[in-house]
Length: 245
Image 1 (cartoon, rainbow, N blue to C red):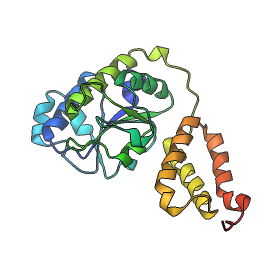
Image 2: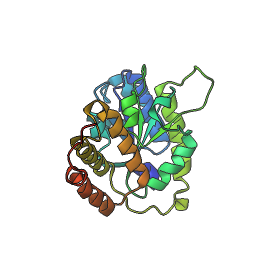
Image 3: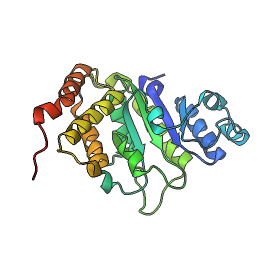
Image 4: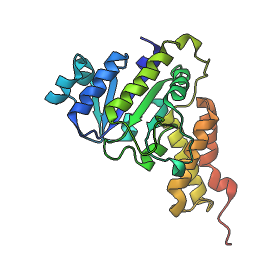
């Protein structure tokens, strides 16, 4: 199995149809993906209808993990891809097609775990869930149309399989700080800026997202992340008390 395929986890957010979960497992098994995570409730992967539709991919369903939150599902992930059929202009992130994202994921799989995140059948991923991802992916097609969950996973799994077959061409990516480390660093920066009056509570959520995006693009290694975190923890002392306007 290629490194990309073995390091990738497929995350389904609150799937509601057992047929879809079974079809997702079948697509995963066909293309060599074996790590399935179901987050925020939804269908039991061992639902009889899911097992029947999986048609030989029962092992994927039997090994599937169930977690309560997206944060738990993304634990240890270095590159998370959020999928969407909707406009993402408000996310301030340029969506990429599955093939392009598969190549990015292939290179990042040298560093650690990869996640492909899919939303609910009815609503997809929320804006906040998309903001937790490092990259947004969109399947091109006629405007106003979208594929169902299992079809979407099929397309991404196919591109992952092709990219994984070319593992030998992966770029030499250095060791990077984990997504968990960057989340902690972002929180420390936000807390320091808030205490110093640079960041206000009403803007905290959007500013924290911006900080996460900046940090993920900088590709900090663990030592660099630790240094920036130490600086962040001293921000109130460095910046001094808030001055009246």
